[in-house]
Image (cartoon, rainbow, N blue to C red; front, side):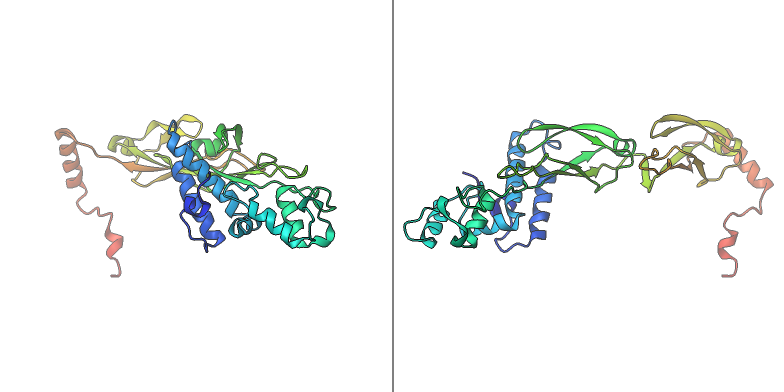
Length: 305
């Protein structure tokens, strides 16, 4: 028997829809099979949370559960059957109800695909949407990729992540949600993307930013250095006399073109790295300093102060 859905999500019976959604998102992120490979306990908790959310996120099904008309698995209870029997005409059976039997019969038939010969009990009902989260690597989200995901019911699906995807984007897989009732269409699978941060790159719109360490010699004398990009390593020319913090742009090396938008750029910011200079370098710098005693790069900070 399924656990009480409120207990599964850890919310009160008076919880709002936003509170239910937030509780499910927290549990889904913690127990998703993609984040816990091979962990059967985590997978079971994810399935239970998904089922609880599907029931409580639907106002009609939640109300039916609160009345005791369906159980935690969404199945009709005896209480619902006998209530309808008592409210109908004396001796009438629920599956023989007609349009005069009241709104309850309509609601019950719509929810559970029952109603026998009732004229409104055969109305097709669309299945519920299913929501899921998918953790995606930074480069996969930017370049686009294909990922296989496992749903709470154990079904595997191949999901295409389009180029330029961002954290929070939702992919809609039509017809991959809960099956409909009375021949109605299936719901959709809505997958929210969770993009992992990258150890080197950050993203602003379709542009990518990278901090690039350079030595004193490379900054002063200039050099050709190897620079990582979203699509591999390229050569970058560091001009002579480059300052720490100098920013350089590599056109078209950001997020690839997508959805009619041009490719972004890669912005490289130079970071001077001293490491451990040896005595000859120190002597050279002392001699240079003696030749330029008045040079002060901070002079503008005190002007007019």
